[in-house]
Structure formats: structure tokens, C-alpha cells
Image (tube, one colour):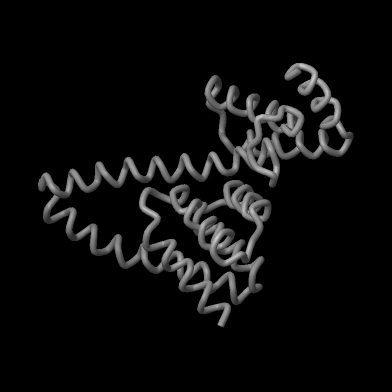
Length: 201
């Protein structure tokens, strides 16, 4: 039964996630964390992180990892198939329609609307992960003492490097993973936390 539920959930995700893999993330969060309760928000964020680091489309990677976490190998197969199948059907139909009616104002307008919505979906997923990274599972608060300043500094450094030097994102991911492991291992977190709270006050 769990396999069918996973297939159906990811079929719905695949059916409505316009705008690429990143646009599927808030739908995955909604179905698996908020509605089904199969994953915690922290587990979802971990799955997104690993899915981003591994080769392949992030939505399919996330489906495979989530399916494995929830129901093992069978769950991975059910979730991945459910995520991929709608795209295969829809893209085949859309390719035919686009080739036939690509000059139609209605088609152009529909694509413009979908692009805007896709941007909103991506922003929503990114904001959820950002809040979880900075404030933890407790959510956003105005209290500066609850902020993880190590995560804030690493976010700022990664964003600066990506915008300034435009390196391969893989290097940023690997570097941040190693730096994070070292920082949290030697408990630099407490030092940054004290500095940040002092500054905040």
C-alpha cells in the first residue's frame, strides 16, 4: 500500500511541478512533510541537499532518496517512476502542440504565466530551506540569539563566491560540506553564536 501511495504522491508532484526540478521542491515538501508526515522538515532539507550534490535532475534525485527513506528500494522505485511518468507523457504532448501552434498568442501567454509561477515556487522552496538553516526547526524569529551564525557566514561566503567568481557549484558544495563538518566538529558554532549575539545586542 505504501508503494502505491508513494507512486501516487510523486505522480501528482510530477504532474504539477512546472518550471523544472527546483519548482517541484515545495510540492514535495507539502506532500511528504505537511500532508503525509512521512518526513520531518530537517529530513526534507537533508534530502534536498544530497539531491543537489548528486548527478541528475534534483526532483528525480529527491524522489529516489525520499522513497528510499520512507520504504526502502521498492519505495525508491515507486517514487521515481511516479515522478518521471507525468513528465514523459506531458512533454511528448507539449512537444507536438508547441511545434504545431508555437506562434499562437495563447500559447505564448500560457508559457509566460507558467514561468512566473515557477519562479515563485523556486523562491518558496529556497526560503523554507534558508529559514531552516538559519533558525533550525523552530522557524523564523526576531530573536537574534536563535540564529545559527555559522550557517549565516557560510551562506554569505558561498553566495559571494558564486556571484563574484562564478565557479563550478560542485566546488562550492564540496567546500561548504567540508568546512561545515570542521566548524561544527570543533564547536566553532558556539564562538560565532556568541559573536553574533553580542553584535545583535
